[in-house]
Image (cartoon, rainbow, N blue to C red; front, side):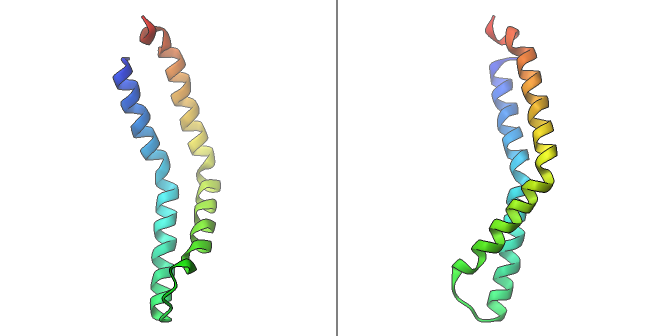
Length: 86
C-alpha cells in the first residue's frame, strides 16, 4: 500500500462516514422547509433545531458503524505502516 492509496482511501472513508449526518440534515431541512412554506413562514432559522436533532439522532444510530469502520481502517493503516516507511 502506497501513501497515495492511503490518502485516497482516507478521503473516500471520510466521504462515506459523513453520509448519515448529511442525509439526516438534508431530510430534516427539506421537511421543515416544506412545512414552513405551507405555513408561509419566511424565517430560515426555523430549521436549525430540527436539523440539529436529526443529525444527533443519525450520529447516535450510525455511531457504532462509524466507529467500527474507523477502527478497521486504523488497524489496516497500522499494519501497512512498515511498507509506507520503507
